[in-house]
Length: 588
Image 1 (cartoon, one colour):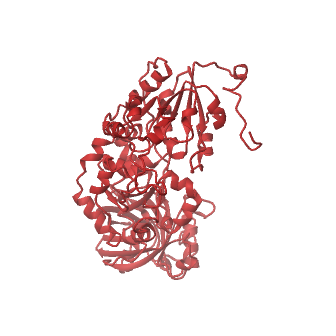
Image 2 (cartoon, one colour):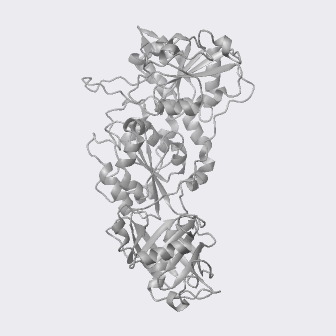
């Protein structure tokens, strides 16, 4: 070992581990990680060993994958003893569980179970000079044989069609094959009843469509630039410009090999403009399934996530449909041939609306994702304990429910072009970061105070920010709104959003108002404020007792109560201005 090599651990395994370990265990289980992608599937099955005091879990990394980013952080989160790879190869274990190949798995001392880390085994690992004849990853002799002999004791397959392909490509390994379903898909199925919670966690509002942009890794994926078209750089700004902010919510689920290959910081740099336009990047390990369940439509490619979406019945539009990297006999290849395509030059909104209106699920994904939906926990635990020669625990085998992600609503700091149409107290509002070709209505500019270009604030008609009502940094809604109107003479309305259903606004000519969502209302308070701005711009005033506007957006109607703010710190009276100077008087 070189001086830079990690030292072997001494507890709970090692030459003198018996001396230091507090508990002796009957079995050792080694989780073999190649990269964060494969680790995700190991995290799926980890709960199958919960509460078994007979089993000591260990972890190691083969260090054979090109994608090493994120592994150290994942191990720290996992909190298991981590063996350097060389020590892992020398340490007897009762079971090793891997979700990928490579890294001399055949040298491990113990029974070996291998799961797929995707939707079955579908892809070919591209090799220079192979001329398109690359073997299918995980189902060919190159991956399943060592010195001509099979070395996997339990090759987990999710559907019999994979067994048929295995028989054709590597019959020597057929004896190790076990049909045990798909734990990732089972967690998705179990999470379906909580779809609305997952949507609310992402700040998706009533009537909004959640669009999930998904990309697998490699140059031909949606995120890559090695296919026929480099779609992403032009698609993202068009989505932001043409999809109304109140009608659509955009999130991106990127393959961990993209996320950790290029680095999360670089991804954020590349997608900065899209993020300022409201795009949210989803945690590729812990939160992508919840986002998928929340989705109304997925714009994806030939990766597993798009196939999982189709298996769940979610409409999928393929922005990249290359099949060069797919086993042509795999169901995923059939799906890519049959699924609707995104026209990169056509209007994205029209294409999404057409897909949603005419969507009919293709039968293949639901059929071929798993032959044992809902049963993988029991089947996998039976396999693992059989390989360990240990009786299963008496408690039922269960996977971990998908956790409810933190509240992560969109934060748009890019300027919004707002169009409104006012009829009495009915106000139609549409907001985009661009100028759609078919836009109609009276226009005004709404700008977030944290806009990237401070020059955007000078011509803004409406200036917005979010904050707690008692935020001492901002001085509260009254003080902040007064400060904004003093600083920006062109601004007609300053908007302080203090919650998901309310805001405080100060009109230059009409005073301070509290806006709150009425029964059944569920839109962005900033949209309520823009509606009030348009309503006041028509020469109307808010009566002393307040009024209710009916805001039309996202295909629905949202009643919004508009009440003159009571006199207090930061009000017109407290600021030393006459009520006549402020427009509508505020009741005392």
